[in-house]
Image 1 (cartoon, rainbow, N blue to C red):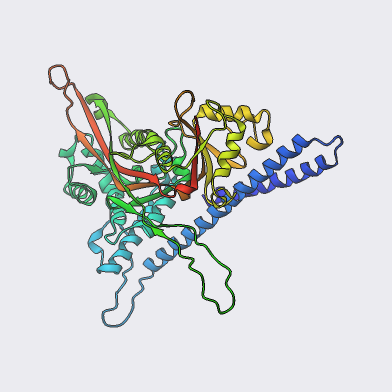
Image 2 (cartoon, rainbow, N blue to C red):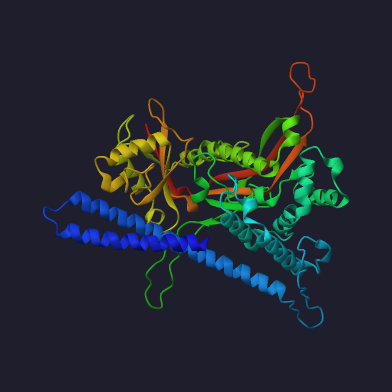
Length: 488
């Protein structure tokens, strides 16, 4: 993955050098073409933003890789500390899934489980991740490694889940369990199923194997939305996630020997509850018996359904039994910029919207600033660019507008795409990572239903089904970091 980042970084450097030459030519060309000069300058600024983002990602990846290498070296060193009561670290066995050899308690056991889970993750083939559900194996592995190192709880829930659901034994058992072949389970396979069920579920569901678990892997965009790409995404093992936020610290100039002024900042603890969501996939008995690639295809179907359901919730969710949508929370919190004219979306509205967000949340290269809108509104912005292209887009021939004011813009299909007599919230701008948080409770379970009954006479219909469920929450955790445009 880092090779892709570094390759793109070199491409940006080459494009930037070409732009410098182009700007130098434009400076000396008569008559001076102001529009071409401005367009080239905007392209240069957009490349600078992308380069800064890539630098950050490369740095983060290298740090994660260093931590992973450190844990792996430590786990494989057979290191021990002498002295009474000192923990003894055993060199991991060849089979990381054989938990009968896990030694110790407390931190020693936690380190052993984490090392085993990282080893299991490393040995998992990329092709097991690479589907429509998880199009990027490197990104998925990186996300899970980060969760193992920084997001696990004291009970090592995530490490245990990875080890329980990623073993070849469990994958075979899961496939048999969800295709009505439980009578073919071996004793070891039945034990693997039971162990996984005890980790995240007590109602009879089977946790899906790790490479297709939407709560662990890096998902693709199944509903034309990239909210997860910009928002803060947390994985939790509890029902309510609690964060920490504070007001901006106010510094002061103080004379020598004088008492410092009260620069107190106020801390708050935002909380986000996770809500149960579900999906159902029916199929005839013939299809269920003959499905050659059920594991990956079911994972793809469930991940796609999850993405489409969450797409609407992340935009306009009510918060009652579902996540709070970003529009819902911004409107409730009063972070609204009103359009300059009634029933009209104008160029001035975009200037006013970006100015309504504080400097710390709109500075290029800091945080994850982005615009979001329905595709119909994005097309209107494209039309604005015909008159003032230097302000709104860097490439009018592209399939979609890549940037506005040098900040990326993405489609959020469940936002308002038209405006008329009612309030219409058509465009959002701000720092999504600082402002909007998505919380996934680890674990995604599937229950197999061997017979579906027809609604006519309640007799079997010759079909079977798979019922999946998971839990997710979301809310705006910093009302000042985002703002929404209301075309009144």
